[in-house]
Length: 142
Length: 87
Image (cartoon, rainbow over all chains, first blue to last red; front, top):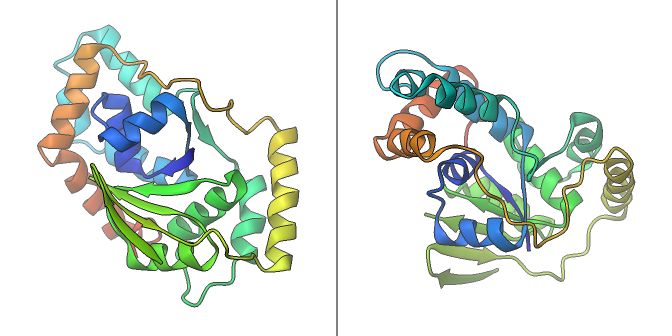
């Protein structure tokens, strides 16, 4: 199975704490994410202050700190990520009943291109409905 | 729409019989060719993904998730940028 995972599941894969279904696909299938989900993860990780990731990793060794930053700055090769040159034409050609924001349009487009199912941590009724509209499988894992 | 509970998640599996709009299908097919030519497609199934992080680094991230730190950070991000929000 090929799946497109959201930012939360992507982060849990990196942490080795992904839900069973996601971990199973990582072990036996093909994993993609989207630019927007990756962007959201990177922006969240770049925040500073109390409770931030940057605060937590200061407790790690310098080597581990570099490893965390480099992993977030360049996703592991096993995670597929398609460029805008490829994805935008599909996003532009989507015709669904309700307008999608950038995040959801890209998710649908990447799933269509890769013949994947969407695997998300939070149910989004609009994304779910739009996925159904174009025949993309949709799976919520917790 | 078929709805089924599966261990660890909820499968909301759509019909596979949906026929794409022909224009969209053509765009998707051309994009697939471009992605393949650009080497953007990851390897075939069977290549197990393994986190490149050390156990200590994985633990730090896991703690960040469990503590709610990630969700809080995402909430702040989407407040500033609705295009990154769940709809």
